[in-house]
Length: 318
Image (cartoon, rainbow, N blue to C red):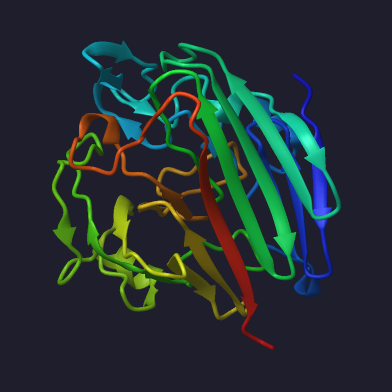
């Protein structure tokens, strides 16, 4: 497996990606020479098991309870890789696979993967393209996919954001706002109970711009929770900012959920440590294949689907 890197850039932003996992290796804001995400330093480190750093997660991002679901009375057993759960597509999810480069220009790159029928136990031959593009200070991720059978699909990117100039600093000095009134409570295995709960009077309330460090004093074991994002015409889901570096990021998506993960289990050799980065994963809800009340992740044969996540950068010092 040969890991290859590719770069897209403009006046403001440079994005380096890898063919393994269609991974985002770095996002550099050029005027400040500031990389906004964590990485594993060397390309070959991505051949090894790692906490999905910058990669595309699939076929099903997040968790599926008991690693099984039913489609038209047929039980499908998928790969278990987190106790009894299937997490981020299983033992050999999209993060571990080599993607083909479909097209590459100065300001965009398109990766493609064909996941064959029963790959990690999922039905259908799934064709998925992931396009990264930049326009001024905006980064866009477009997912286009279809299958030849009924199947469940949930795709997200797993960048760990750290807006500090010094990446050895944790995320405690970051501020976060999530445009959500409800979150999905989970059981001990991090599987949603099927109910939703209002964020009011809980430490899950990020409706106002909140300091993450202060929140983590209340929830010391960190966050790994899915929010039901409010429906907005502009699709704005979250804002992440850091006054020290003077950077703010607006996140936009057409997906119904946002997984907040504060990296409490983050570790890779001596490069990464807990709470060094946080993930804001626009996606469908965890365990949707087994929850009829959740927005459906079941896709129809040969119907084309499109998801997107867009990140708009603001320089607070301008």
